[in-house]
Image 1 (cartoon, rainbow, N blue to C red):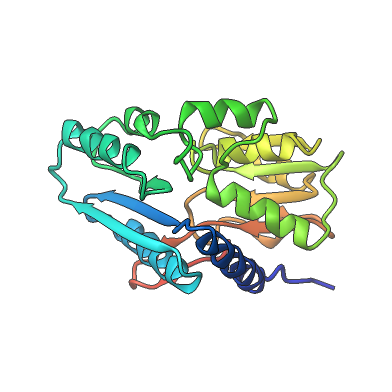
Image 2: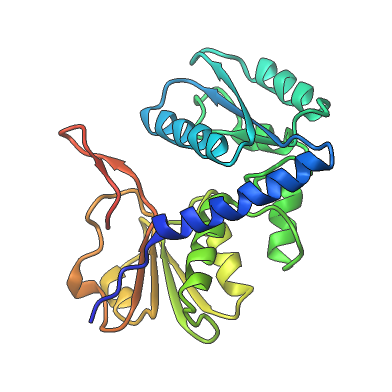
Length: 242
């Protein structure tokens, strides 16, 4: 019998817990505030930023958007990041990706203070994750781990396959699973016989950027499949399933 892992229900539980934590912080005189930077008008990014704003509002965290046009320079972006780093009223900084091609996103991520790098992309946090140290973890892999934890899915000793090797999901996901003693394989655009690899997987995490990529015959009975992709289809609809 198939079982659905209800991410929305888990999100509700986490938000309720966060509401209480925010109340406690405010009683101590701390007002949590997240700054989100977006350069350009990528449609998927707009959806993400809107959802982040809504989520912050739901748990009473202050939220400020810094939206800039496509031609916003790298130099100007770095100045904004530095300003936010030095702003004691800002507790977290998130740079929405992708950014326009003329901006070196790794340079921008590196400029964000590790203490405010809530997306876990600063090299300090990336390095700490690889060593199993306490750090900020990229939000999507962190969310997946919370989902796995919620449903008591065994990781240790299991074969886990990640579809996609992005710095945002695939690579940090690898470290998260490896830190829990899974045997991890990453598949990407150059991987041969992906179907053969996925059929041997106990856990499949799809972050490949293609809607409807994972088919029934690619999954063995009893495997756990988690899809984290959001894709805009030709008819304009948003697809969130493998």
